Image (cartoon, rainbow, N blue to C red):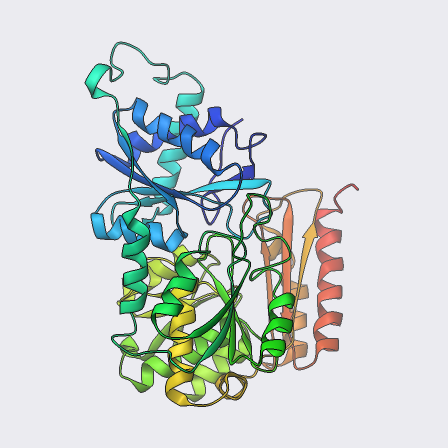
Length: 452
């Protein structure tokens, strides 16, 4: 068995799919491909985190690379440390997945996620290591004082919190009442500290991780408890992070959910009003709601589109020199402040905007954009077919003609699973549902229905 990189590193059930043996091999391959004499490693709060961190560190050290253990730290905190210290880094986390899963995200020196071509080289080298091609320790393996050292550094958390607080350039969040859900994940210390230092009145939930309760009925994947808590507390805003805190969803004072598209619209509006939105352009993925595009067009803001994945958003931002991009899931990237999606940073940007506007988030979000009803179906098929979109072109074009520019159709096969994702946006939820149902039937006819 080997590991395949998805849009955000590798993931699997810890100690079953993501075994220590595989992770040791990945550490060895990463040492060779990414280079450098020192590697930073952080993790979230999963019970399997120390096990896999030890395995990755052993693989790196066996190739002569020293490892600095940053402890429990959000993914964007590790990326910040990587950028600040100019060192490659890894995060042991499966993000918003349930606790039995775990994963590994890798950053090149400077805090950037790996581009596709580097991941392909890394996969190839990993396969060689696992197959014993230059993989078994031999006479050239580091020995004695040449093996990597393993050290701990607890200062990264403090440095990251200082960075978060400094992002508001001296502005404060006094008089704002905030309910913060840390998902029992990696930000359970950093996020409450940053908000408190900025003067917000904070009620914290999901901040007692036990190794198994990460993302368990809490955080951005399950925001319902936060919605109730915000209303009960009479709070101004609620913030729901995920397990590794690289994404956030918000809740307004009425308990309404504010998703990543709406957050991006609000932040784009704010940056543009302050002359901080480079070339009046924002970067989104193909999943971003059509209502967002309409809202940006009305405000004279250009929209650039990428494939799904925050690393593709970042690549586009860097190519164009733009300052803001994000995903519907709540991954927002402020390129001048971070090298990856940062849920806590995004939350602070939102709170700062609400504070300066002096108006309820519900009003601001309603003005920022009007969402079109969106329906998404993941169709599990019997046979992966990369050309399924071309085969379904007549059906897709018929659906688009029926929507007549008032909606949108997106059909795309998964790159790693026998799935075809069918998404439709339409003026009404009923029309979206009916159109999706017709396209799902076409996908099943073209690719077959998966057994079971």
